[in-house]
Image (cartoon, rainbow, N blue to C red; front, side):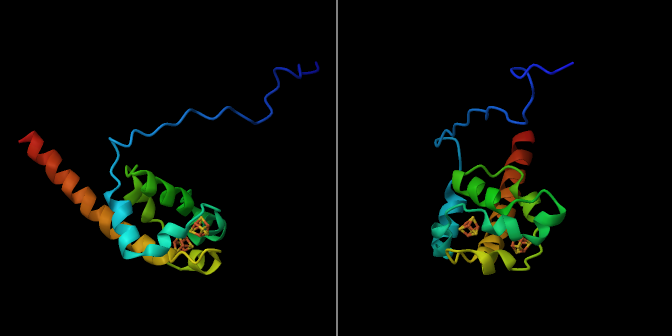
Length: 128
Ligand code: SF4
Ligand code: SF4
């Protein structure tokens, strides 16, 4: 039976609506990274880093996505994702805008570790 061309699944789907309430997100980590590594500002989200990423070849780690989430202040789960990074530096070598991605990743890990610790302490204090 010939599949109806109107109902055939072509592998495309309508993207979910995304909106960010800037009053509810935390942009302090993004700002700290920008202060400590100004090249972070030069990222144009081209995806060159993700295309060459060693960790991305073996896991679902996506450094371009992590960069975007940090800049949007959406921090949940990012620390765990960053543990996939091997700090090999290939992303830095290919970046067309010279973003020092390796240093940015190190800063992200440090700042997100502190953020997660504070969040855990706050959670425990609320449960006391
Ligand atoms: S390659 Fe550079 S400019 Fe492109 S997404 Fe990665 S960090 Fe941003
Ligand atoms: S330093 Fe990390 S993010 Fe960059 S290419 Fe290597 S594994 Fe991927």
